[in-house]
Length: 215
Ligand code: HEM
Image (cartoon, rainbow, N blue to C red; front, side, top):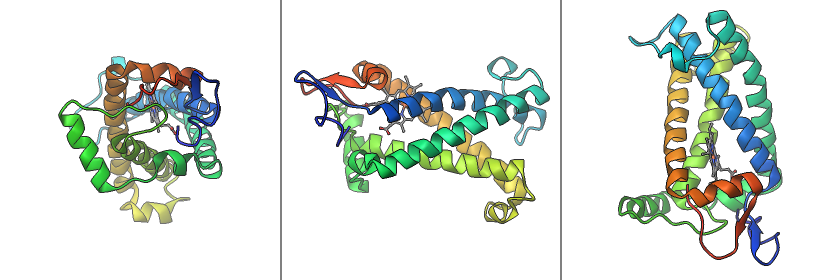
């Protein structure tokens, strides 16, 4: 995207998603799936609200098993996330692809989308995509930090105090999960609406024809 789009590739194809973004994106998807499904099983053992998640969509079989999955995938999620953030900052990926980002542009793009017009130019994220991607990255940082407090409340008590203590961190962790699940739902629906965005996220390349973006 941005700097990458148009900078590499042959006459007909342009590099839309650099390898580092593709690898970290798909590792994140797998780690997040394990985290959410095992997290739902852990939640069921001691629900915060008056509902439980259906056992069929949970992972781990029982509390102990779910905790093993959660703690294993946690390292993958966190280390992969750090690699993505470092790459994003050092290689200029965030600056080139997520900026500029203004509330006015997001609102204008959102209004267009409501009228069924979604911008999809090869190699450029529209303002709503930029806001959604920056937002979900921020929420993933929050889910990891609140998870640290729930995991080790004594060691991370200063961070915990900022979240209203152990219970506050648990509630924050839950709502951050809910925001991520909501993002993924809308994100996947958008990919289904604009399916030509899918292959470039696997291969890196898109046709140069001047069309083809917007999930
Ligand atoms: C935990 C789940 C997911 C998260 C947090 C996530 C997040 C993101 C982010 C942040 C980007 C922008 C990447 C960048 O340029 O730095 C992105 C792009 C993309 N994601 Fe996901 N994603 C998730 C799941 C999925 C799934 C399940 C699919 C497959 C249907 C998918 C398909 C795509 C595609 C096709 C793009 C490129 C969109 C475009 O070029 O317009 N993502 N995703």
